[in-house]
Image (cartoon, rainbow, N blue to C red):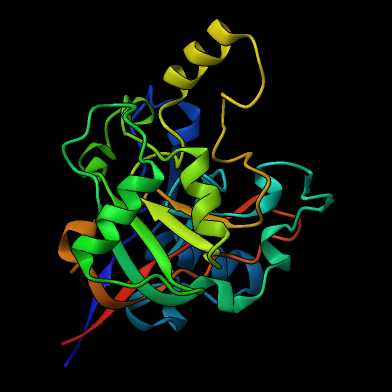
Amino acid sequence: MPRYIDLSAPLVPTPEGMPEPLAVRVEKADHAAGAKGISDLIGVGPELLRDGEGWAVETISLGTHNTTHVDAPWHYNSTIQGSPAATIDELPLDWFHGPGVVIEARGREEGDALTVADFEAGLAAAQHELQAGDVVLVRTGGDQFLADPGYMARGCGVTAEATVWLCDQGIRLVGIDAWGWDRPLHLQAEAAKAAGEQGIFWAAHQCDRAYCQIERLARLDQLPLTGFEVFAFPLKVVGGSAGPARVVALIND
């Protein structure tokens, strides 16, 4: 029987003091408020509603990158390989579904970014031959820090060279259970300022390849290394740099 594994972070209000790139606000209106809204809108009173209740609704406020989401090439640069970078609504739907493979990266030091050799070793461990259209997921264990204000500063990340290597083999969708695909921002910043040159900060994002990243994944520990499908359809944000997504894995046992 097929099994579905939810790989998305829960959409819940974040506590006060959460950094803005992590913040989510959810305002809830209950059935009593819904009944009043119906009465105000079209004059149907609570006595005409089942149990005197109206609709329950929620108002959500969050950035397109503030929960589990898919990054579009437009997020990285305005042009990719000399052409205008695609926004999230411009990408073909087949980019967001494919056979999955997990690359094990738990236990690595913060900022110890995965190299081409690490991916080759991970694919060998999974006994998986990479094919164009595969979805490559990096399992760091970082989802345990989803509710931590310091979440952005955690993770190992992936090198630009490894990202180019994946893209050049026809991979268009990758993912990670950390805040970002690159190593933590503060480590990138230190290295970039010390060198005083481009190509160090945000190197994997800005590797000049058209691909998508799923960031802020969860529960990758529930997946086998291979033998599953990934569905990661983002919201169709017109002109958007990303779209929040409900990411699901399907395992056919």
